[in-house]
Length: 155
Image (cartoon, rainbow, N blue to C red; front, side, top):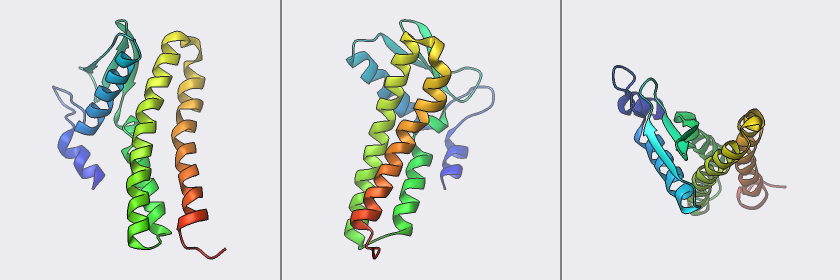
């Protein structure tokens, strides 16, 4: 279903545009960066399906579909459903966990953008190690809490 959504909302020829959820994540990242006192702006990339992020008119990063957290939220929900408990507990944990992952993702992009802006020489470590560690670590922690406290699995 997510692939269908992307195919219907992204434009990949002549004029590029991202799926609305990716644009929303980029816009929220821009708002948070500006709230923290950084002069941030975003713009649709003209040569690919991504949103370019600038701080002080310096290109910092591309926000692509993989940055919008939807794939990891789908993975999170799949795990919770696979080890589901009663409907109410499962539903509430899915909603809470998904919102937490989404917010964590936006702040992760903000933190890494600031770090790359200030320390561009560490871009590889920040993006390829710290970047996934934050979101996957949060997901794993939520899964752990789910299995230990709410899943109903016999210990």
